Structure formats: structure tokens, C-alpha cells
Amino acid sequence: MAFIFKIKIVGSAKPPIWRKVKVNDFISFENFHEIIQVLFGWSNSHLYMFSPGGWGTTPEITMDEEEFGFDDEFEEDVDSSDFPDGEKFKANEIGLNDYFSTPKQKIVYIYDFGDDWRHSIELIEVTEEYIDYPVCLGAKGDNLMENSGGIHGYYQLMEAINNPEHPEHDDYADMLAFISDDDHKSYQFDLKETNEILKEMR
Image 1 (cartoon, one colour):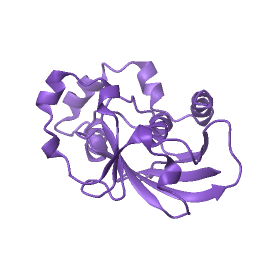
Image 2: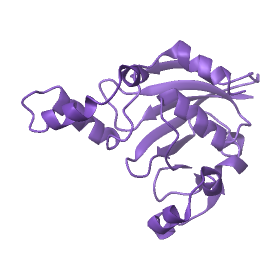
Image 3: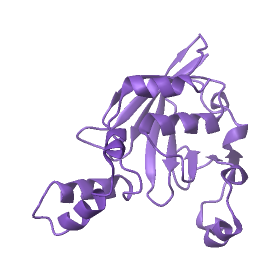
């Protein structure tokens, strides 16, 4: 079977930023994470987790830290006690169909524990057929700038950039001046290009 999900950036508005995607029901949550990274133009360079309601809710479905290549310095900087305790599963060991079965079920995907990019994921349809690769069926809103402080930090940045009288306008303008034209283009969501990338994720 295949699942159709609607994934929305929590806190986004005017417009709300969302993607609709179709994936096979048996893929792992690790694969699903990789698909979400493509859908929103993220760089896959931060920690992530899935849980029913975000922080403090269980079960938690988390990344395999060894595969991410954390070093000793990272382990010293991050205290596992900073994160909620509870039932946990590795994302590469649990499939979507272990959690989802019927429409309207939801889960939250958190990417970058510092910036706290939260994505609300809802299963909206279950179909009988399998597909050869993930497909983005629709979208609204462009990709967002990573490392900008999460959704609220991003909106504050945009407010300052778009208002020459804003006290932080010059500082943000200087920061953005280092971003290349190619980087700017990468924030513009392109459905065709996105599906071309997803097609390689067989």
C-alpha cells in the first residue's frame, strides 16, 4: 500500500507552508526523514525526531546517532538528560506502517533541536497500490532559510530585511549579502525539480 501525507511547517502563515507526498507504507522513518528533507529543501545536517505531539510525548522515533557520525566532542557538549525520557525507537528500524494505519493519524517531525523546525504530519489517504519512488503531489510556500532561528526567527529576519527602518535591517542585510544567487534560488520551491530528486530515492 501507499500513504499520502500532508506535511506542514508548524507556525507558518501567509502562506502556510506545506507539502503533500505519496510514499510506500513500508518505508522506514529514516527514509521518510530523508524525503521530508528533500520536500522542504533542508540540508540534512541536524538532529531529528518523530513523536506524536513533539517534545515530551512518546513514543519517540529518533535517528541513529552512530550513523550520523557524532564524535566525542559532540557527546561532551550534548547531555542526553536534556531530552525527554520515554519509549524510543531507532528511525531506521521502524516502518511507517508500524505507526500509521488509517487516515487522520498524525505525528510531529522535529528537525534541528536548536532552531526547532516542527512539521505537523497527517496521513490523509491510504491507497492499495505500491509506487516506484516517492512523489510530491502538491505544495504551498517556498523553502525556508536554515539556521535562521526556526520559524519565528525566520519571520523576524524577513521583517527586518523588508523594513529599511528596522533597527536590525543593516545587520541582517550584511549577513544575507554573503548568500549566493544559487542559494537564493534553492529557497524557491520547484515541484518538477523536487520530484526529479525524489525519483532517485527508489
